[in-house]
Length: 200
Image 1: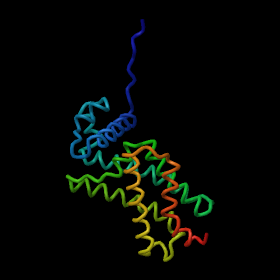
Image 2: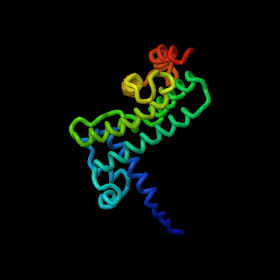
Image 3: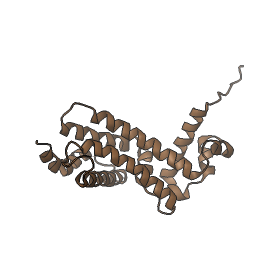
Image 4: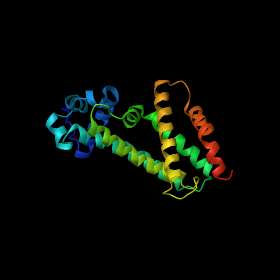
């Protein structure tokens, strides 16, 4: 009978397991209540190995947020480069965000919930969300007059971002409607004014 040889994970694979475990823990318990011991156990690593990858809970939290944000921004950039008309690009962008919420609810909760009890972690969360604002601004730039530095674009970006975050959190807590139905609600509310700017 052959003995099983346990495959040794690469550093990248171990880091990915830690990030996955951290997403689950932060989503379930919140930033303040999450313990590094619990993340290590869930990831199947020792606590010293965890600290080899991430020097602190804050560093791990930031890595989680950046990983989630970067994936969303990459999707948004791909849509923004498309030759589709503005309404189709807007619809696809909203649907892509809601698809992320639907398929990765734990990651969505972590991204959308700003820690209340740790000012440094809260600052990290807001800084990462500022990156999300930049991605939305690229999408809206051709629809809102005044150029990329105008207050109208900045205000419209924040309005859309906070609205999307609010409807996503509501949907996570009220999972009855389909993604397509939520997308239509956002289009009905948000596209009316943008459609005028787009000349449609």
